[in-house]
View 1 (cartoon, rainbow, N blue to C red):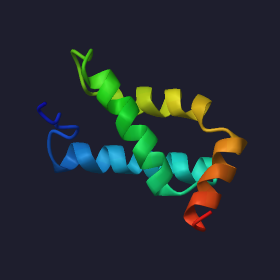
View 2 (view 1 turned 60 degrees about the horizontal axis):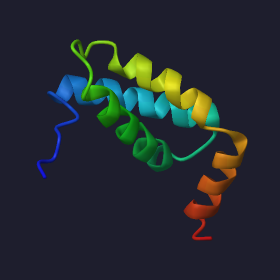
View 3 (view 1 turned 90 degrees about the horizontal axis):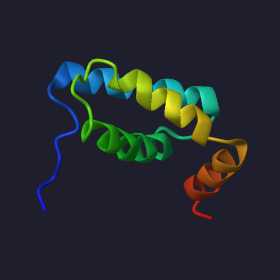
Amino acid sequence: MVAMMLYENELDKRQHRSAIHFLASHAGVSEEFVRQLYELELESLIRRARIRDFLPVLVVRRLKEKITPEKASESRAMDRGG
């Protein structure tokens, strides 16, 4: 199986990292927790995307709906090793 390149270049990577930081701050969860969810969602969208310019916006929109207070609690427990 060939690994998919999620980021086309450094600018693309910075835009996605910024979106990850925004989501983590907004939801009160770790960036690592959000990054894992974000990259899974991004990979799913990339497969169907004809234009990649709006992918950060689409991923943020989808994850805002998925990251709930329960998920935040799970993330904090994972960060503490529990």
